[in-house]
Length: 355
Length: 85
Image 1 (spheres, rainbow over the protein chains, first blue to last red):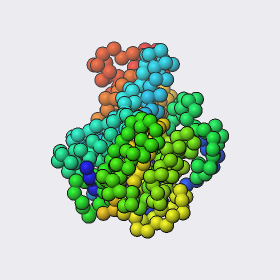
Image 2 (tube, helix red, strand yellow; image 1 turned 90 degrees about the vertical axis):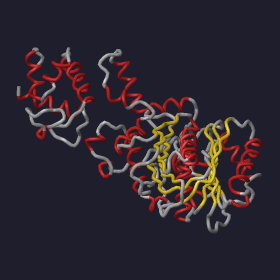
Image 3 (cartoon, rainbow over the protein chains, first blue to last red; image 1 turned 30 degrees about the vertical axis):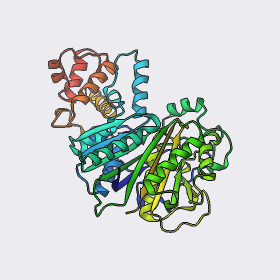
Image 4 (cartoon, rainbow over the protein chains, first blue to last red; image 1 turned 90 degrees about the horizontal axis):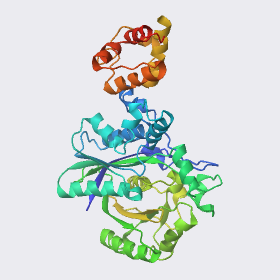
């Protein structure tokens, strides 16, 4: 299943909202445990009266979606589909805290209404007055992949001509504290761009929002195309991942030799990165490799940032040194494989190509 | 009464996240909903919670709610009439 990408937009710990600056000015964060998004002046994108109730993730989502649609010259998409691991966790925390402290009485309606996972997709639809298909997937590390697959199927079946697909997750103090107790993050503060140099257990927490305007047909706005997507749940061994990935690349791109770049989801945790290292040493051969989680941190829908990065690289034909894993020469970039996994359970892969 | 109205305006701005506004921009007698401040039904719920949390006052019927939440002044009069000012 293929689709053309007419517009991309992201709000992340990088300067992604201004797509022309992103790849030239990578942001480094020193002495941190987590990366937070660089938020734009929302009043430039959203009506203050309409956005006053929106929490941070809703504002980021609505803002990125509006920018994406504008870039694609798309006023009313045939579907709005989002994927999120934790949804609007800030408002969920507010609501639950209020429920506890007020002994289940006098609850403010706003955090309750906005604590649902589909708030962002709904807010975008309300802003656009869009009555089309609206769906949100909450499948942990497959949330964005499920949303993307749904969007691709709608286009493939002809149910919609153009769709808006997004991945989004926010990091809060509570969610960080809980996942930190589970050992997800490095204990010592780190410098983000040196993420892979630390050999300790755990990764760097992150967050972000990325939206894509997808089209059935190639248009004058098209910047790249998604050739194929696949997922593997709990593959068991790196060898099994290698086998599945090999089959996928053969079908989607015609073999490893056709790839110009591979973008990997290495997150700095030696245990989690084992499969990537295995693939670099076996399957990937001499294909240049890059990685991205030192730019955005680890979160359930980080693969949406990777897809944004791949599309931006294809558009700009530029691969910053700070994301490269090797020194292999890179010529014209036509085909990129994105391969990511979350907690070694949710493995996903996309092939994205220039048009 | 004027002191209470000023305090209410600040509480409304805070409760409804009207961060772009200041108390002077809210007309005491202007309708809070649709015209005037342009609030909606979710705001009505937020104001009901505000009256109960801050002043211990409950609005018992929809009719009473329409009267009490008509303007900042009507809210202040309701608070004063119930001896909670």
